[in-house]
Length: 612
Image 1: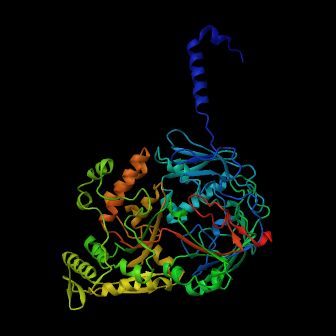
Image 2: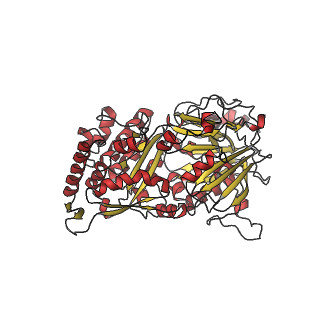
């Protein structure tokens, strides 16, 4: 092209064109090998492996695991049925987390990520070698299909990705997610977390020539791009996964030293004690124990004594995980709408007696929705945290500013009597009165009566002392235990009075807080707002958490949120041990140094039998 005319007569146009070219160059995407929501990634772009794996771990042997309950579905997209354990091993995600970092995410299906300074979007470039199990390439269309179907058919994903306004193909191997808000550092990271599904497989026909339907449950072995495939299925009883020799990503640095078992088998048990006996007999290789009393009294069999079974109590998974485990009253029920009723239910809970008699002192009382982390509130609010709460002072309980949250303390007859007396007083303020041995509504004269819904008989012994305590103040509380499928359906439709709920929090709370406590999720079936919280102050605090411009502001907003949730007595906090109690037969093992924030099971473990 002849540019002489520009030199002779159009210097202004020339300057504009040069500036235009410079602007275009400045807008070239900066491709990264991963993303850290806060701070920097620990590993460089040329890392060879994760620091906690053994790259020489043999790929051999079988891992035999157990699960309690049943399953009737292999489609993890939908909010129906009970999904089989282990399904995620069939699928890859765009990115993969390192258990040595709180905030680090590295490319898996995606070889790189880019995003603008305001984080209004995120673009992923897929690896050219990424393949489905049938050999077809993973495409941007698959990613878009996956996002659309997960948001359409899953209440959980719909809530979690509510700020993802859409995704589009922006290159042969590029897909771009658009966000409806800016400067939310979490969004580019979390869009790398969901399982990517094969569009062509779901839109195709099965072996019988019938059209597949992703909106329905299925027991047909689903296909993915991950390291394992479903080898066999016994509906409700067992499922077997086998390692794919042709797994496209087996040599990626992010995967080196992982997926070492040639097969993983899950056997389902309807009774926790039978499941434990199967482990003790050696037909199950690994067990994570959730009963402190069983841990203290039942692991004295010969295989433990002679070293064939190894016991470990590890804090690693809880170093960066806040836990709230609680009885959760359903605020959609009239009985629980008054905060004084909910507070009275807490005074009737004698944790100290339960811990001594059933758990051999192995539990700790939970007193924060972010318990066990630096995010947990304590004492009285100070500094920026107090400023945030002052902005909402007309919408939150005044005690937030004057009284640090503490749970009632029982454990001896006098304290228990005092607590029950306080509970009766709170109930009276809320319009209930104790007549004879029944707690009656002062207006309707109807007795206070409700069910505590459970999904396993093994949980009943933990709940029975609470039921007995409630009866002392005239409350007719009953335990109802149902099978896993019925339990899941009732939870999704909020068809319960009180449940036994658990929320695990990361060190970077964000969009999921609206799913847990936000008003919009309170009536959306399938959400994790089990309590039915619809509170404008809570909504405002969630917005401050997700929009915090820096870590200091984020932590202050999180602690403020914690205080308001506690002060409203939305749940009756229970307990947690703060340890991952595991036992396993010596025929399986793990690297000497486990990751800082996890135990890497089963991904980085391997079979000892393979090296004999």
